[in-house]
Each structure stands twice: as C-alpha cells, then as structure tokens.
Image 1 (cartoon, rainbow, N blue to C red):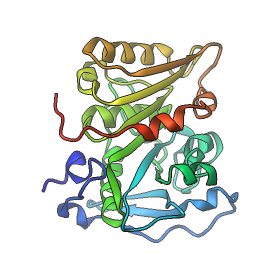
Image 2 (image 1 turned 60 degrees about the vertical axis):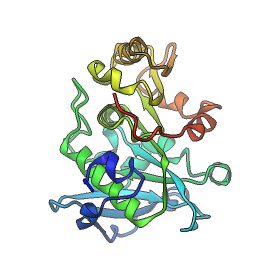
Image 3 (image 1 turned 135 degrees about the vertical axis):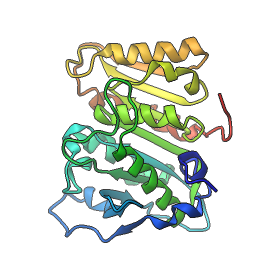
Length: 270
C-alpha cells in the first residue's frame, strides 16, 4: 500500500504499513500552562528522514479503541512557530485549537485534535500558490502515525488553520481532496488553479474585510474559482475586521454542527 496521504487514511483510513518507520518520542518537560492546555499531551514526532516535529494531541476522554473517532488537524498561524510545543495552542492560536476540546463539545462531538508546530522561519505552504512545504509533508507522516496508533474514522478527518495555517489548509485539501470531510481556512489563500479538485470538499472559509496582512481578495478569488468549477463552498467575510478574523470565525454558532455533519466522499476523483 502506498504511503500517500489519501492512501494511509484518507488521513484516517487504514494506515499503510510503509509508514510504520515513523515514530514519536517522549514529550518535552512540562511547562506552566492553563488547565485546558494541559488537556493536550505534548509529544515530538520523528519522521522517516529523522526530522523532529513537536506536536500536541488531545485524546477524547471517552476514547474506546473499539470505536472510531473523528480527528481535527489544527494548523497554527505564524505566531505559533517554534520548538516550545506550546505556542501552536496558545496566544492567538488558542481559540482555534481549543474550540474542539471543551467538555460540552466533547460530550456531543468526541474527537481527536492534533496540533503540530512548525519551526521558526518555516512555513506550512508557499504563500503565492499554497504549495506544501517539507514541514507539511512531515504533518502528513504524523497523521499516518496517529492512524496507526488510534482508531480514527476514515470519513471524519477535518482540517482547520488560520493565517499561515490557512495556506497549509488550502494546500492539503488541494493535493488530497478525497481525504478531508471538511476544511475551515481562516484569513489565508490558496491556488485558484486547483479549484476544480475541490468541488466535492466541504469548505467554510472566513476572512476579515480589512485584513492588512493577507488580502481579503485571496479568499474571494479562491471561493469564486471553486464556485465556477461547480463547487458549493461557504464563505463568511466580516465587515470592518482585520487579520484576526479567527476571533469571530471560531465562535460562529453553527460551525461545530456543520463540521461534524460532514463526511468524506472516499475515492472520488477529478
């Protein structure tokens, strides 16, 4: 079986044996954190090429290895970069990473949450065309290893990211449209030429009208391109809001119910 993203799981289906060479090592020493942050277990993933990536994993309180669970991949923004294994789920990245783990949400939607950390001066994807970088390839390997370790539902992989992480979100779903049940890209951009590949992917994108860091036109054009290709993505633009549109996006009352209602259409092709 090929060790490709859609083969191993549809980031969550049966993981290929060829990915078994990757592993994780024990986490960093505990750092002062708030109670919710402590719900994320700190680990370091080691890729097949020996690269190490800090990441956090939230395991549902009710996890039963005989049942399948959804998984949410969180791709942090630029401020989350580093090696401390904390910034990707704290500061400006708190709302997007913690949205899924409250007791009330988990009671209704028990799910895993994975939050990898990109190194300083690196990116999840190129800014111009949102092409995956080596760091995003390591994330793909990480997700494969999580599939090997836990019982994840192959039709319920969800990916969300803000700013730098939004570019990574667009890059992942563009390369592997059959993998993800839903994507929530916030204030970033994608490659419009990839729009025809995304017509079957459930997408709810967000952007602030007054974003000075990443032009709102990046979202407008990407959504328009998908619609022209025959897709039906959702898009919310916040009037008078700047780059931190995630503060509004991750409090949308219908977001969670929309996300967890989505199921991946496995094996569809362009």
